[in-house]
Length: 261
Image: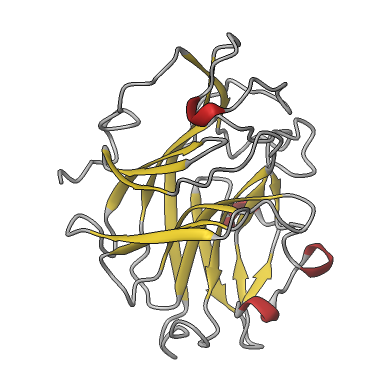
């Protein structure tokens, strides 16, 4: 597959939409009303640490770790890592994804072993859909997950690798969640999110503690991954939705300039 470049429009190869859509979220990572930094209820007590999930993270609200679209992790003297995380949960706009929404993003994958970037969803201790996860120790592989319905998959390709730019598209259908990579459909789970699903969005860089993937090498002091654009599109309110979903009210909308790292 053709590898996209960071300067080209998002997305590089956009599949045709089954129905007319509108952008209900265009990510502006600098907007404090759209995104909360350094705090997430996906972590115990909202953070800052989550060792039970094999993470060395210590979430920080410092905007230099996430607000530019470059999500950083920096080693701390205590062995943990200061890490960047943004979520729509708790923000003034409180945007939530709904059945039928389509998320498109362009990401630059990290190079350092131990890095664990992800775009995912969360609400009330569950509702997790993984748009992607990546681990550089498996350099050509992306992981996808539907934890709402207990399914997932992985995808290997030569265009995936440390430092590569990748176009992602996820369709949150009520009856099937569908993942696209660089313009090609790579997995349809046939399970979906259900008709009543809704969840907040999280973008972050975690650091592996070593249980499932290697921890960073002793000489690694910093790592990063980049999100140069992220858009959520929603089918027009005409009653038809991808994956058999039914139209739902928005949990908040925004139409702002995309972030650039």
